[in-house]
Image 1 (cartoon, rainbow, N blue to C red):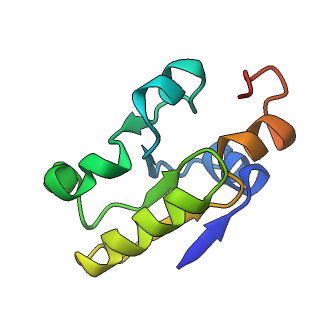
Image 2 (cartoon, one colour):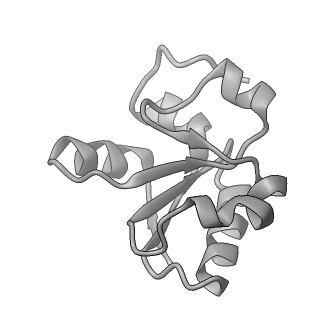
Length: 105
């Protein structure tokens, strides 16, 4: 599975790529901060809602520190998603590397 650091993802998006940004955090976390354009499917809901996602789309999975997203991305791979990327460091690292104004928790 590929992984992006937040600065790499920001540059990738700036260069015109449009991956699906899948946030697997809980709604209370989502309400505190999120990446622009991300969609929320909490990790616990992913098995029931994975069909909402396009298996062929490049999908970057996001969480707080990159651990839940890693596991969620591995799960998506077992379902046949072949273009999944984990956001290493999660939104915490995004705040450090890309958007220092992003709220932290």
